[in-house]
Image (tube, each protein chain N blue to C red):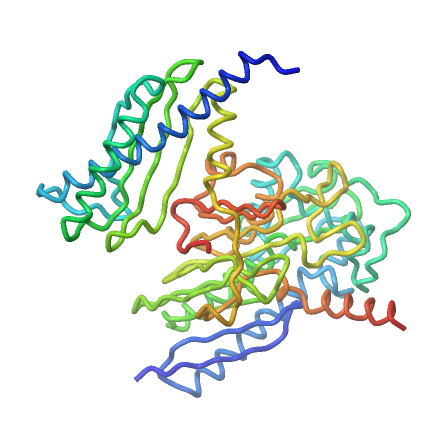
Length: 295
Length: 179
């Protein structure tokens, strides 16, 4: 007989909620432990908010770095979207975010000069050969995986659960989530109003897949929010919130940011996804296949 | 001052376009009513059922076609149920001063209630694109928020929950600003 197990904890700067069905309570406890360890390892590697992370080492000095196996999907997705968005979506935005005040100390105080970012090719080169991931940093480079890192670790955790034979689960990190239920129970997810956290503008209904949301009205300081256009060095304001449904969370998370920069028609040629976009004027569009509806 | 002829043309275009929408919706209604007597399998969300209709040139036949379509839809409804649940789509053409233009409209029906509609303009002429876009913009409803407590939900997706560190920092800055 399967039982439900739940846990909630804080990691990588956000609150996690995980629940799953399993037959054995003792193994469930062990699974939660291994999940937390896995997230810890991820943060240790990729967080720019930790001085001891791999990313902080790359920010400190140029060189050749051997990256862990899990680096490849992130770099591949970033490079694909870098090319599609003409360089607007880029992990090289890290230095700009730091200059603007979104730094490891959360100073939220913009520096007098916000540096323009370098191009991908002039800064880094990522290659995979014989299963070895190599990053060449031509100069010290502040990377930031914020546009898809959280979605990616949600996928990693979900796959860890699958490896343990768990088929029914919800993995949520701060409103971004992946869900799977073999009995087709529907998960109802409110789409939070970007201007009023007490309200929702619609509902997504999932039986499987991932939902991520992004809004420019939150995580905002000075004249910025967490997305900055590297060409103009300002944060896009025409769109107030975006939600994306996709089969995995790295895609859903990455496309929420990409939609701040490029039209759906451009992304449609490269990805399978559904979306809700709310504009600054209070109007919204929902794609025809989005699992859910707006009010 | 605006050229009165020009204004007149624009007004005509808008009127004919809006009336045309009525025509296409009417055509969808007709398509649905004819469907209930046939053995065509019920359309599902995955299986779009497409009907093509050639709407009459609007400037001449407009109101007549519109009212006919509406009344036929009404009479079918009053015949005690029912349309088959599903998504019905139609492509229509209409004549604008710039030539023939096309739009796609779809209507999703559940228990005789329209639960969803969508509109896509296919115009190539820039002014027609503009009119179709204006219509589409009004067509997609403005967002209406509902209180979270009034909606049954398991989860919330939004940005207020995303960053513990960031929210803490903002809180601190606000506290400092007050002291």
